[in-house]
Amino acid sequence: MPDLDLNKLMEMAQNAQNELHKAQQSLEQIEVEGLAGGGLLLLAGIVTLLAIFVSWAIGGFGELSHEYATAIGFTLVALGLQVILGSFFLSLLTMRTTDPSQATIVERVPVA
Image 1 (cartoon, rainbow, N blue to C red):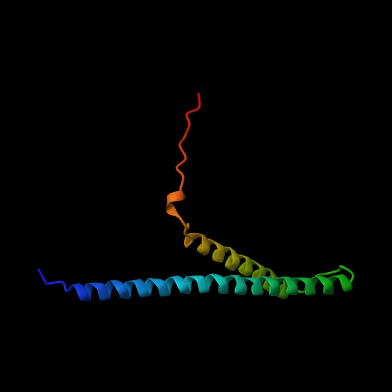
Image 2 (cartoon, helix red, strand yellow):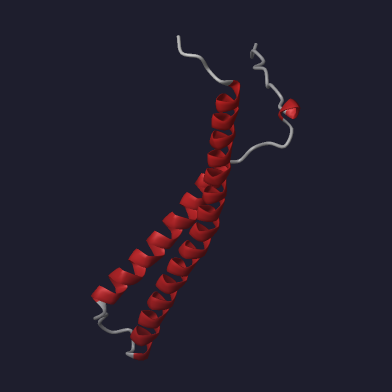
């Protein structure tokens, strides 16, 4: 069995801890950027759809001839919502409690 040097082992543990800290910071950055990016996509989609609606209203609510732009607008809205909800989901997955000892266990009560 190879000899394990305690200093080498401590160095490996410190490197692993540093990498974990970097990964956590990256996830936090992704969450913030996800909210900002999703918000921009959502805003762009809503502005696009509002412009199409105003154009349609000025035309007397006749024939709607902006099919491509409408598809782009709804796609931007859907992508924006997906990115925002994905960012919230990611933050829920990485959320930690401040004090694990405060966790409560809920017992099931039998119904008579």
